[in-house]
Image 1 (cartoon, rainbow, N blue to C red):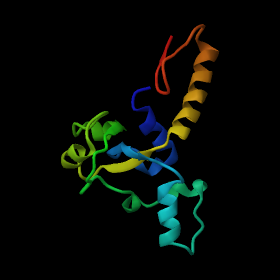
Image 2 (image 1 turned 180 degrees about the vertical axis):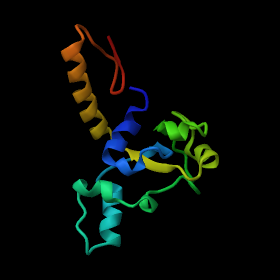
Image 3 (image 1 turned 90 degrees about the vertical axis):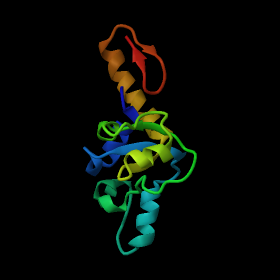
Length: 137
């Protein structure tokens, strides 16, 4: 389940597929992007069903990031720049300033982890649960 958190985010935001995306920094409460979109475009309806409509230029970039956060995971497109788990966000901003930064959403990761593990236990005779994004068979 390499890059699991990033894969979950790509399910939420399919328009980011193939782009350098990093997951890290703070935790997500309500979808931050939806809150910003509602404020910027109050004439339109924005809900979790409309996430795929968020324009690319609305996503926050690493460029100019300041802070002490670290990357939880990164898409394969971001990894091509030398960005991966445990890399500081400020260092990542120097390596790939155009990368999109998304906050972590452990509720979603746990949800998809449970779904994935249910499928594994349907196929495998034995599964060792090693965390949200790891299993052993």
